[in-house]
View 1: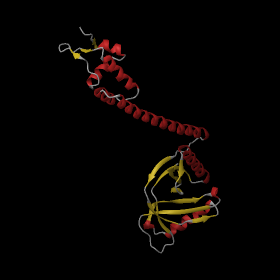
View 2 (view 1 turned 90 degrees about the vertical axis):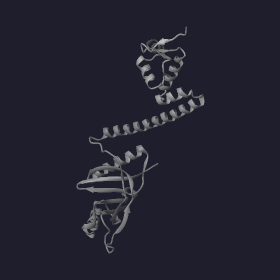
View 3 (view 1 turned 135 degrees about the vertical axis):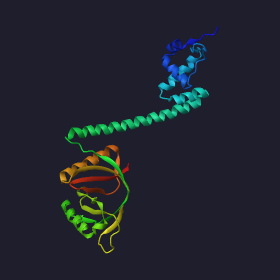
View 4 (view 1 turned 180 degrees about the horizontal axis):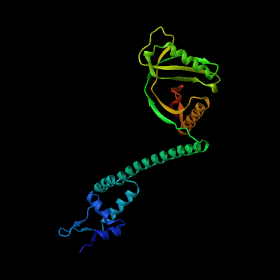
Amino acid sequence: MSVHYQIGEFAELGGVSAKTLRFYDEIGLLRPASVDARTGYRHYLPQQLEDLASIVSLKNLGVSLAQVRQLIAKRCSASERRALLNELKRTVQQSIETAAQSLNWINAALEELGERQSPIAVIVKRRPAVRIASLRVKLGNYSEVAGFERELSNLLPQDCVGPARGVLWHRCADSGSLEAEPFVALKRPIPTNIPCERKQLPEATLACAYSDSDDESAEQAYAAIRRWMNVRRYRLAGPKRELHHGQMLEIQFPLTEN
């Protein structure tokens, strides 16, 4: 008479619970060798311990139950199993790299939190292209830009002006000179006789931070974005943008990856 085990015995031998075996039966992963028609009791053969061990070992490696079922059902060859495990290896390696990257970002955020009472949040936005009118000018100091912003605003018909206004910074003090481009978004084309540039501010992915409009707050926001970019290995992909939101300043750095 052949040896067979009831579900409890087989579960104990295989190192799993009876509930797990019932679930494996329900999903077609490991069927019992026979089921008593009168009592409904499941019976398993000793040879099925090997199948159960294979299932458990693959599951412990992170193989999904759907993939395990496929492997078991097809009695896959060693090469097919190797291909699956290599794919799983690549997935795990990518997860490790992503986790390590996230850990670096968290450490940087903790370091900044230790230095400031109110850390500056940096977020990423994707912004579409926008039509603008602008004046590109060289400056002796940062405060001069306000006069050119007023000049541009006075040049433009108000019915053409859109909601966004700000400054593109082509050169800052650390480069040895200041070159700015005050701009105003346009709702519609402006007359051709107005002495300003007309252009498209390109679509961009931007690292953004907010600050009060005073120089010290703005510089802290600039520094926060630079640190954020260094940790994530981004580079600047165009002139920095400053947008005015009432008394609040939004600083934007166009991004490209290293």
